[in-house]
Image (cartoon, rainbow, N blue to C red; front, side, top):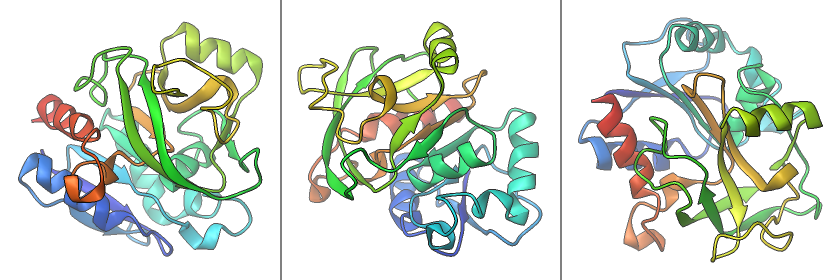
Length: 229
């Protein structure tokens, strides 16, 4: 599997993502600067975490209009999988590639901690390394991770099986206490209609090596490699 990572001014998790992808696939990802207008041949496009353009105006709003995003949209429309993590999720919503928006955390504070996630489906190239209902523990690091969409959109996402992950307790229960940023219906990650685009706020790439404190993210990357190789 050959991955390509899109890098914006302000990206800061591209190296973490690079290491996780290379560790899982054995092949170093390509890096593409945001001002490029063409993409290399790749099986997976990744928009990493960080603070693209310093989060000015609104998180992801400026990055969504970078030259490379036109190519990303075109590839996605042809079926190339696209993954956006944290700031990448924000960029995908601002670019109209995923529904909803990421608002300021309900606590009005930056969150940097480990959280539990419940895998809502194993039926996707992004989640096939897990079992539906499985609980994993991965880090978050965001100030604007409060997922919001109107009730009709939320009902459609749930009805069509497009919720990928939810914040939960260690036992897998959906509680207010486990939903630290206040996301609607505890949603931590969503797919597009074809499940070829995924956005999620937590960082599975930072849970792939014991030295980082956990390895629950390994299944995420191993599953993608298996599906796309």
